[in-house]
Amino acid sequence: MIALYRIAEQAAAWAGKLGAFCALVAGLFTCLDIVMRNFGGQGILGTVDITQLMIVACAFLTIPYGFMTDSHVSIDIGIGWLPLRIQALCRAFAALLGGALMWAIGWFGIGQANTVALMGDKSQTIALPMIWFWYPLLAGSFFATLLIALIVLRHLAVAITGRDIAPAAPKGEVL
Image (cartoon, rainbow, N blue to C red):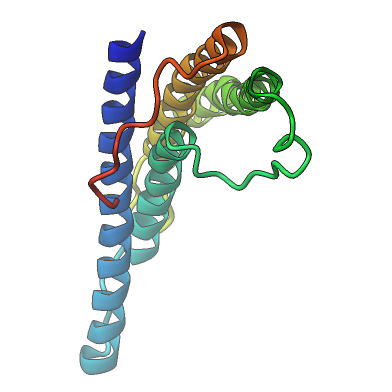
């Protein structure tokens, strides 16, 4: 289980890096468009379409990393004083709720993506197929759901054994 958890951590880190790269691309396109408009009077055709696609990809590719590193906003004032096993059960329940949300986003997103694909929707400026916007959303949602299943199992193992079976690996990198 520990080896699988470490592989999942690495996969989430790579997805997070890809998401961060998408944010960089969105920022660079926006800045370049602003500079070109100020100095040449004409911007980059499709900046809004490309930026929107990159921001969707950024958001949904970094969410799994947030779950794996437990870096989402949480309130543990109510459970911080509880025994470790009870804390682990509370964390498993919270992760299960997050997993249900991510699964629902992916599941209901499939229906919307199918509709977009069937209609052949395109973006307004440069006619990007709108289905492209759904790929990172679906991939990130379902990847996060799989990772959360591992997180729930980890917390349940802590609740059963009373010790952490996969303590956090030392973080030597910053995303």
